[in-house]
Image 1 (tube, rainbow, N blue to C red):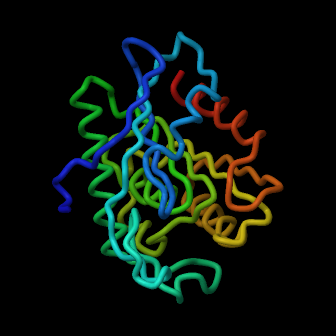
Image 2: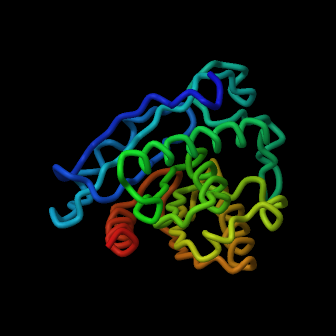
Length: 227
């Protein structure tokens, strides 16, 4: 798959004429159906009709899983788990950023202004929406980063978009996450805040998953940034 090919997606609309979009990326090995059930749980009001777009990541071999082919936004190697920050597959991250940029462009072409588009993602998906959102050339509604970290952090000062210098970021993580240690997430938040980004940081007593209270916070945040 090349960067100019639109990803296959699942779409859920909460109203007949959506006035906003949320592009929500799944984690490693999952697919676009993973977060589809969350839409009704958010109980968004009819006055805020939203189109949720859940893309499927491309199929590719993943080194840390012995080269097994699965849906992944980028490759992960064994050494990537070491230290306070990951050193991910940069080419893979940038290719996925380009794919999400194409989905943003499609939403704009369908009549949703960039300022009414929020990016959301879990784990690997969260890393991609962070990398995409802070570099996107038009102001977005917000970025939701769940159980994840900031990739390509060293390049961000030179590549950050002025249009999204103040984009709202909701960053949430589990205190007992064994996949992405919370120290990595905290370091990412510190990096973003040092560059001036307004980050709403939330910790929950959970592992690599979603917490019931987190859904409440996600709903409140979405209503605020899409209002």
